[in-house]
Image 1 (cartoon, rainbow, N blue to C red):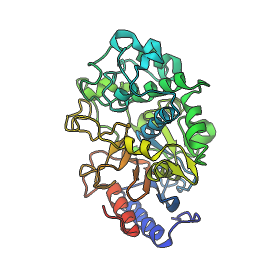
Image 2 (cartoon, rainbow, N blue to C red):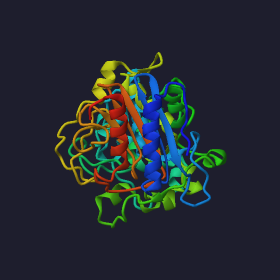
Image 3 (cartoon, rainbow, N blue to C red):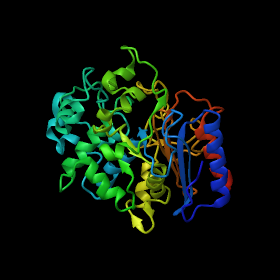
Image 4 (cartoon, rainbow, N blue to C red):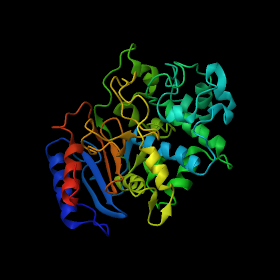
Length: 388
C-alpha cells in the first residue's frame, strides 16, 4: 500500500496516518480509504490504502480514486447558497418564492433560504413513488418539490431535509444567478475552479465511473413505512450500496447526497473554510461570513423529527463540533458535513485545520471505540500538536 507524496506533506504525520489506514484495512474496518488534511494553506496529509472494492482482485486505491460522499455533498451545496449570499444575489431572509414563484404553492410563500439552511423549511418530504426517472430531469424534480404542501409551518420545528435540501438550494441558486447556471456548473465555476479543484463531481459519465470505489457494508438500516426518515427518503433513492453502486444513480443529479470526489478535493474545499474563506490567495468568503456559518441555529436542544436526536446545526447549513462528534473536535465552532456510511469533511477555524475522509465501506451506528474517523482525527491532531 502506497501513500502519495505531494509537496508540502509532513513526512512524520503522513507516515503515521498511512500506518493507521493500513491497519484499518488489515483489520477489515475499512476496504478502501483516502484521507487528506490541510493545516493553514499547506496540504500536510494525502494518504490512501486498500482496494476500490471488496473483491480480492479489485484494483488498489490511488490518489485518483473517487468515492461517493453522500451528505458530505450537502456542505458543497451549502457553499453554493453561501456564495450567492456573498455576492449579494440571494437574501437568506427573503421568501424563496420571490426568486422561484412556483415554490410558493400550497402555503410555502414564507419559506426562506434561512429556513432551508437550518432544516426548518417544512419541506423535507418527497412523494413515496419518486423514482430515478423523476430525478433524471432537473425541472421535473424541482417541479415536484414546488408542488409539495408544507409538512409543518416554516421555522416551526427541525425536520432534516435529507434530499430536498439539494434541489431547493440548487434551484434557488439557479434562479438568482444572472447567468442561470445549473448547480453543477455554478459549483464548478464559482467554488471548484477558483480553488484549483478538478476531482469533485455531482454526476458521473462512463469515464469517471471507472474511477469510483464500489460501496459495501451498511447504509441506513431498513426503514419501515412509518419511519419519519421514509418521509424524506423514497425507497427508490435509499442510501444503500445496492442503489448507489448503479450507473443509473451515478448519472442522476441528487445534489444533497450524490457527490463524488477524492479526499484531496474535499479537504481543499474545507481548507478554504478553515482559513476563514481564503486559500492560496483566492477569497470566496469574508471571515465574517465564515463566522456566521458557524453560528448555532435556534433551539439546538430540539429533537429533530427525522434524525431522532438533537442536531447541532448552524445558521449556515453545517453541522457543528462538540461532544456529540469527537472525531472532528470538541469545540462548537468546527464546521463539518457528515455522509451516511462515514464519509466526512471538517474545518477547524481556530487552528486552520481541515480534514477529509472518504471510503467505500459504509458503516452505521459506530461508537467512539469503533469509529475509524475518531482514530484518524486524533492521529492528525496529535501529529500537529492541536488539542481535541
